[in-house]
Image (cartoon, rainbow, N blue to C red; front, side, top):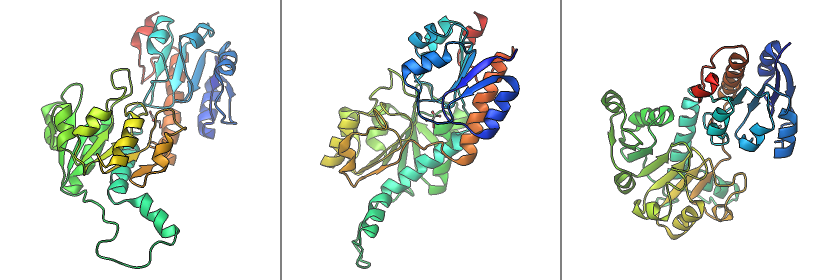
Length: 325
Ligand code: DGY
């Protein structure tokens, strides 16, 4: 008998076709997120789940799913999953690292350039008929080339962002829980600095750390005050890493120049203050959202799930201890 699985949100046809070869699949192709009660009911008799960052997989849910063996998240971030609770119940959890690095780095760069050159603000002005002709001092932006880029989080995506900085001949600083190898630093031409040094020296501060209790409000009022008044903040990682209320205040008062944001606290409900500001570029959590990357992410999650349910070790297992239970 094939194992039974739930796919909580819409995926691509080839993902479903692959899963169907190995599992009895129940899928939510309507793509409306299940509320916690519906999710628990649908998952109660399943052996595995392919889920996304909009699904909370916590201890309460796992308790109600006695057959569950694997939680395959379609995302590299997994702050929606209670990993210790999974491990305690012998449930394997997996993510989708690697396949989205370049697309996410490209989006971080879109935000860097967009915020520096006021792209969305100026597009609104053009559409609103405000452009009456060329002027020397018109809507001036700031240079990205030869500026200093500070990256918080020098994992795979942080490194992909740093690689792109070479083309702009930037000085690259980074801060990370632990320093990366000197070969990587040399290759990226990146210098390790403390958190406060990075904030003080950078023209562009890009956040690429995973969200956790330790990184909650990594950037708040104190940190924003340390940044240059001409600096730009880019958050392309997770809402909650920035204190959004403090950021709105800093953008309003001119404590920093601009921001580019792909992620928000309590998304999709944004702090309404952002909507009143011209000096912030806002996009809706689309860091990895290219056709090829989203297809690869879904397939990576499917491969992880099938490996777990057919006696193998999923390539992207987050909690190897779970497999031993
Ligand atoms: C991730 O993979 O964590 C992204 O945020 C999802 O697009």
